[in-house]
Image (tube, rainbow over all chains, first blue to last red; front, side):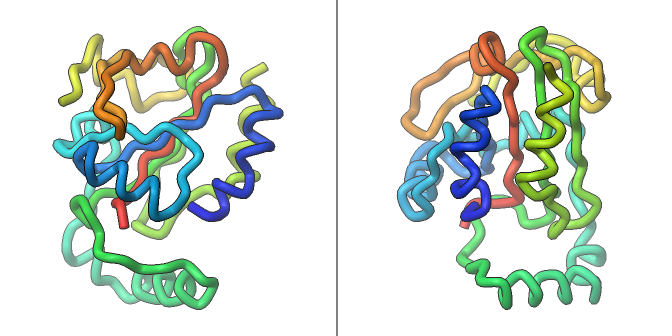
Length: 131
Length: 51
């Protein structure tokens, strides 16, 4: 979240609207926004309907507990990422989509594992192709 | 509550039309997802979880 927040001005300059989707209720989402000073709209999707609609899959418990995921988690913590009590199903994989003004999906990233996030610069680079 | 419009099978392929949905924001307000991409490209980031 910190990386995204730091890049907000670049997304603004690129003329893009950024919106987040989380699995909490509106109240959970509002608390998250306040805690992490989220500068983007946050959509509440407690039933994961939007996650499913975009084809984002869930990992099995076995995948969630795999050594490679554990190592990535530890590395994330060493980089300063905080770990709180998660709201939502931790088996849900994240994803990123860019939708152009014609409503077409022009970029998609389906996480291969729970720690798989494209960095903001990759998303910004992909935004150039939408013009 | 989120209400989806259109075919969901198209949502996960590049260049396909994104289905629209009525979504609820953190302040409890509702709006169409398409409102967010009408004037500018939308970067839609699905979080793994809140927290």
